[in-house]
Length: 61
Image 1 (tube, rainbow, N blue to C red):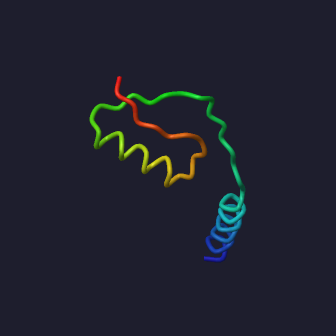
Image 2 (image 1 turned 30 degrees about the vertical axis):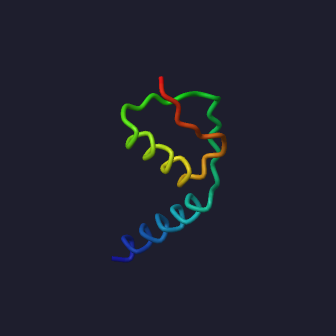
Image 3 (image 1 turned 90 degrees about the vertical axis):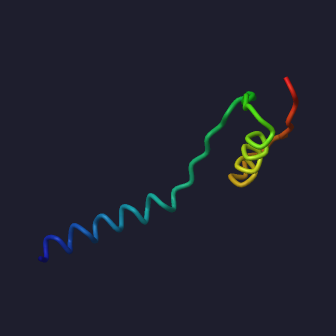
């Protein structure tokens, strides 16, 4: 029982450190092709919700 408790404490400490680590992912300028206005608006909401910086614009192709 004590070994299980020690293992859990180690796991929780590792998860605590991992959750406080900040990662940055740089994405070069790119475009996303989506079919349908509703899907395009959903993509925009998702990008804004994730706080992806940049200019978002829906254009017809």
